[in-house]
Amino acid sequence: MLSNSSKYALKAVIYLTLHTDDTRKMTVKEISSHIQVPQAYVAKLLQDLSKRDLISSTRGPKGGFYVNETNKSLPISSIVYAVEGRKQFSSCLLGLEDCDEEKPCPVHHRIVSSRSRFLEVLEKTSIAQLAGDLKAKKAFLQ
Amino acid sequence: MLSNSSKYALKAVIYLTLHTDDTRKMTVKEISSHIQVPQAYVAKLLQDLSKRDLISSTRGPKGGFYVNETNKSLPISSIVYAVEGRKQFSSCLLGLEDCDEEKPCPVHHRIVSSRSRFLEVLEKTSIAQLAGDLKAKKAFLQ
DNA sequence: TCCGAAATATGATATAAATCATATTATGTA
DNA sequence: TACATAATATGATTTATATCATATTTCGGA
Ligand code: FES
Ligand code: FES
Image (cartoon, each protein chain N blue to C red):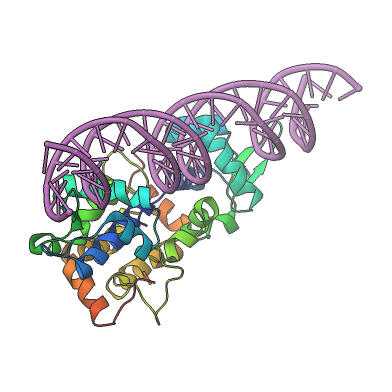
């Protein structure tokens, strides 16, 4: 239900949240080895997230990617939407021009509430919350 | 959340449910023009569904695709799963090896219920029910 | 029995997503 | 100030999805 890119980006950002802050940065090579995602691929993803200010980075020696307090409080939807757009999550399940209450497709009323609930989770859960579960050993990344 | 192919297949099958049965068949050309999906594309999809016995067909003159009573009572999940597989709907949202209650990823407990609800709709709604809504003008295909 | 209409089988092309590779720019440190 | 390290920018390649095209098989009707 999420693209590969989204999955990779989320894993990377969650990992960064656990292991970095303004004073502790982490290089792409380290990140990719820990979350087992191809280095060049995760590099591209993180560069993009950084450009959009969803994560932070500094270059040069001692540089790397990291997440600051502001970044950590972002909802996970911000990552997903940045990576793959939000349109596909709101467009009609049958591909009609637009998803419309007035002129709904036959699945609309049946599915729309569960879809909203799904999106609500993405939009109301912060990166920090997920990282918290990891730290508390309530969840795992592998 | 559904692939293009799934959307096209569902539209086609719903349309067939409204307009065909054992005695009334419909040619690909007619179908594609009504649901505005490229003819060669929908042809391939319907051929595949027919091979899997999710819809019916006869060839030669007066032939075409159609859905019989058995076909009509199938859940829409059968179409979706036939077209794009079911794995992506049950695999871990973060791409972990398997989606596991025992060793869940950090989004698992937050998202799994809304995902199940989504799948439940696909699995408990029949083609015939959707077509019924169309007939009753409670829903539309364009 | 022959013809044309239809699905079927098969494969070619185009577009998008995923993956890989590399040259460039910025920056801390010796 | 020069060097090494890291992100950045850019683009190439591979793979999957979507789309198009066509020759073959089946079958009803003249
Ligand atoms: S109109 Fe189809 S899902 Fe809303
Ligand atoms: S373990 Fe990730 S969604 Fe279930």
